[in-house]
Amino acid sequence: MSPSDSCYVIVGGRPLRGTVAVSGSKNAALYALAATLLTADPVTLRNVPRIADIDEMAEVCRSVGARVTIEGETVRAETPVITSTAPPADQVMRLRASFLVMGALLGRAHEALCAPPGGDVIGSRPLDVHFVGFRALGADVTREDGGYRVRAARLRGARIFFDYPSVLGTVNVLFAAVLAEGHTTIVNAAPEPEVAMAAEMLIAMGARVSGHGTPTVEIEGVPTLHGTDFTVIPDRLEAGTYLLAGAATGGDVCVANAVPRHLDSLIAKLREMGAEVDDSPEGGIRVAARGALQAVQVQAVPYPGFATDLHPPMAAALTQAIGVSIVHERVYDNRTLYVNELRKLGARIVTAGESVIIEGASALSGTSVRALDIRAGAAVVVAGLAAQGETTVHDIGHLDRGYAGLEERLTALGAQITRR
Image (cartoon, helix red, strand yellow):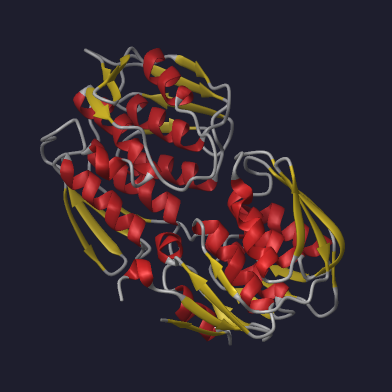
């Protein structure tokens, strides 16, 4: 059976209990892989999750001259020479983060031709922010051969304002700006932990960056970057999924290496729902649902607000909360694809525009559902764990893109889940 034909079979109704450690951040690792193109020196990345998206990004990097080897959770990359400034369109269109090679190639080779990026179909994610930044740095941006070409004889620092704090836009422009001449200021930059980590990696490579993790990032360009040995941060979205699964099943789950300050919004909502949450500044978050969960309202907004990627599994958990909960989606306009799948399990859930209204607590019953994208897949897994009986989750190739060893980690917490 091919990975695309695989499914999960979950026998639910069991409280999850125990301790789990999550993988390195999927998103941050993808940004780090793209950043390796900015230097001719070897780069070693550690704590990289073993997921399909990493393999996809490695192929994109190889297509422009990188030598990439993956051994467990360690990735080694070296790009002594950029051999192409046009990664294959079919590779780029499979993974949205692949568009980050454009900023890296523009910074190092002063030219790139890239197809529009792919990824999950969760709504419009315009590229305007990327191009505003590239143009401000002195690049020409044109449409060509079904893609976008950026060229610059030289890149010069500039003050750049983003209409929207785009995560990929911030990272892409950061990649170009670290090798530009002079000073660059990015105003209304994305402050996500993964963006801040990308900046920390660039600093370890010799870049001069400050203000990362805030809406204003300052960059002083340098002529070249060197190699580094860098460790990827833990995945806050994976951590959040396990915490929500623990709450939804009435369990007691500790994510040992989660970074609490990365999940302030989730911790606040879990406490508002009536769960007990213990978090340590040294790392680690424990959630225990000892009584009935209560309905809440959630706004999925850019960081440090509630993460849009945790919206679907949060909605699944809220099916077990007493009262009417509402999740307002403010980031992506097609995030609610998971709703019909939860309804198959017996959830009383409807959409109202880009908001979701959930009436709980629902007695969910196992059935056959689909993982329509990475986070929609997380939603049906959480719901399946809370449901009575057997749930079959199809199309789990999406989950393989975002969660390393999902079934092993859930099994360690007491879940009955098997891959078939």
